[in-house]
Length: 282
Image 1 (cartoon, helix red, strand yellow):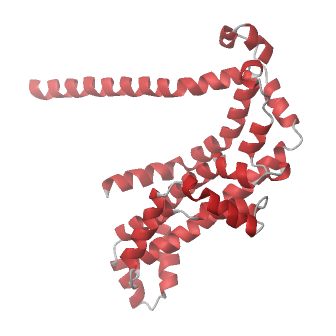
Image 2 (cartoon, one colour):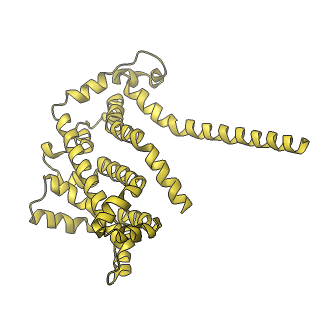
Image 3 (spheres, one colour):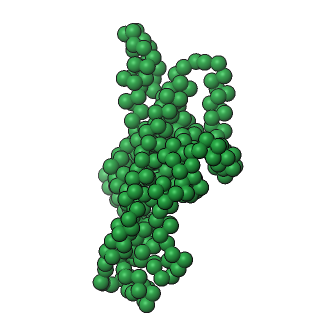
């Protein structure tokens, strides 16, 4: 009895230590975010006088009002929503179809083609930037939505993720559906695709996050103000002395651009946890 109770006490003490370490790590990770939010709620002139003023009142939302006062900010938000939303949907469709094909269908050079697709993970975007820019210039795709969306559709990670999830689903489901005279597309759409919702949610979050925060390609392709995405538009409002004279305004821009991603994650976090835990088990 004593050995059992001592084991329970030891396990309880170990759990408390792990909990304390987790809380400490969470505080360390949240501290920069809290600092940015606090700076965004302070007057720029007050921050220039004393940086310690961030720790006490008064706070203000004037920096956020100044962002909303920019006449084009809602157009930039719309552009980011359109580009990120359409890119995410198309990536999910194409990755799901490709993943099903590589995992379930037998066709010539299947493994070679999958390896070729995965090699795309090793090619940095900068390596194809000049060729892509010239191609899109020739096609007159710059300053258009499809010019901002099409490069992101090359998603080898999405194909790999969906292929692995389809492979993990027992093939007995396919065989049972075939015995019921179901077509290949019906098996994909009705039987297998619903089982991959955690993977699709994870891929959708990562794709949307990457597209929403993308700065490099929109800076090159979207040169007209009405085609700016939110990241480019907010950057264009910064002055040459933004970091010294407008620190609060600069931090409010960071919060304003990152808030939609946080909201999106809060809605889909259970799918992400399920997908990550499922991948770990596999």
